[in-house]
Image (tube, rainbow, N blue to C red):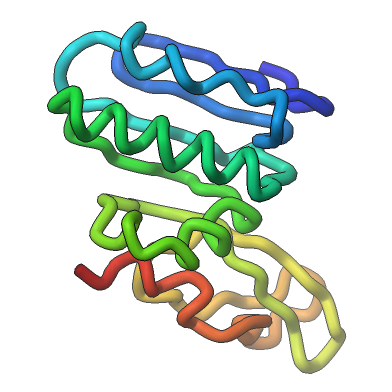
Length: 147
């Protein structure tokens, strides 16, 4: 899967990967009905952009999965999607195992988006080794975990 300008979707069994843009061109409406029954793992790690129409389609897709009886797990969620999903109350309580968060180093000003879990663990700067700090409010990432 190569993430370019449009949304790229890859499926392998119960895993669905997403890359590129989730925008008005994203066709997610029929995807839920094409997936096998049972638990589904969504991996939107290489999503690079989400606009309001794309977020609406993402919400409808997640809703269709839930209504279809799928247990949904999200892994390796891109920072841009994670911060958007945290703004939507309907998405609270989703099972998210890992996501990318924006960190910055106060020493050398290096920025990074490491893969983290809901504890937002300490991250060492790849440039200078100093402890990095979360570059945004924790609520931008953690609201989704509240039920």
